[in-house]
Image (cartoon, rainbow, N blue to C red):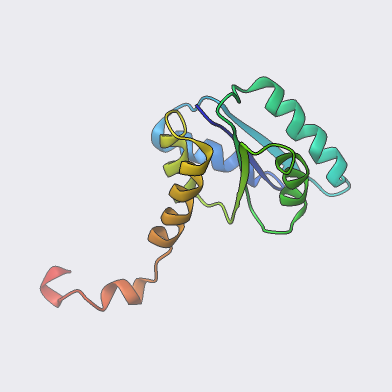
Length: 139
């Protein structure tokens, strides 16, 4: 089982997990780190390391964070660069989180990355684009 660590600016990561649990129930082997004004990337590295120490990480760790290049990403990259069985996915949203939370118990980190990337393409939609192919009677 791969561990998942959700990191974000503010409380987004905590609330993302809560929202996912409303839909698919209590989650295990998932940790959450929040980054708040006044904290440093070094503070966040410490938070990540504390979370990782409490998770089952024998099959690796996938960090899922809000922004590429942001402090949660930068802190995770300091940890992930040292371990070939860790990776980071950015741009996390609820549909991607649901996919990952449902699959991490029996997927490798590499498989989870592929799932996240495929899910991102499949779950970001435009109302008008989805309506183009529908006929009036389908509505």
